[in-house]
Length: 372
Image: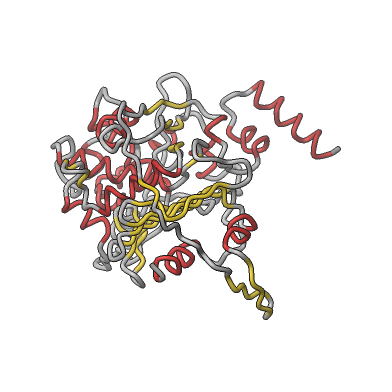
């Protein structure tokens, strides 16, 4: 009963204060893959002719797994493992053929799922395209060449490359459990431009890696300034969504309905097969069936191990790098993954309501790929 009363109180707060991020946080409690329903958005339209992955005549049959918990080993089928770890979609593709595709908990092929931070990798592609087109001159440019209303003078030392590699030194609390923290402001707030303009640089740019959604949102603001009148959603539609033959429309969540700003640190809402095509684009070095969507050099620089300066080998240009098997991934907070393995020509997509109790979805993908 107390829980119900709390929800009612929170709903009253939201109703009387629509811009109150604390009220939203209290009512919705925690980020969910269905959050595309609670935020305004822009639609990203599919093309008339989609690209379709073929289904193999010899589907992948994943045998049982041995799970060790508290010193005890138990066997579990692969599908039971996916279900018990809150998976809603799992897709394995090799050589453009679907080896395994399954959906759980009332989800299906057409079900929409929030990308969360996988959107950071999509944002990176758009930045690469903007550089190819000359809209952005160089990743060495200071962000203040594009953002003129940021109050902190120290931002003059922050470059686009710092944002891409999370070495900006910008103060940002990544906690998703603090209703008064930066993550709540960016996720539930209704004025991202104001929030970005108030950010502070706490450390010398280029001296330390710190994973930060703040960096990705500032990067999105830089891209938007470079695009001028064209929205980021429109740019995604014309440069990626339609050329790649996506099967469904997508949306990008905004901070508010009128003159809204894309939440570029998260929140591209789409389907598993279409997320897989983002992986295929990079698997093909930025080329899509003969058309160079983003430069080969950009893909190479986004997926290489680079530990120079403050960079860390596991993260580059908003992509996660796995040195163990030379793979790379787009990742989201609830265990959303687009895993790409160039050596095996494999793409694996995992979407879920939660990460679950699995040690690592990366390790699961690596284990599957090793057997192919």
